Length: 118
Image (tube, rainbow, N blue to C red):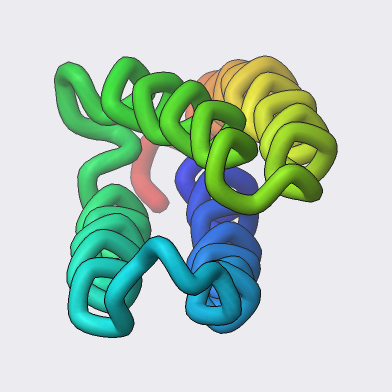
């Protein structure tokens, strides 16, 4: 699960950076505000890459997805991109857990079938 979720978060890291560039064109927003918010959220993406398997990591990832969709208020294309990344996040969590379960079953079968002295 960790690899799939981290891949999604790294993709979001770049999308947030590009959305910051688009948001800078808004005359109502200061450059400092745009890059402070974008920088904090980009940093959160990187931190979440390491926290995915810890308690609350997936929940924080969902909060990030909601924030990404909500950023469509400032950059309208983020409504679409946020929804796409929320779907990717769901798939990463869902299929990542299935892969982890399959790996655990395989490891148990391998340990069960191996000679006891090896």
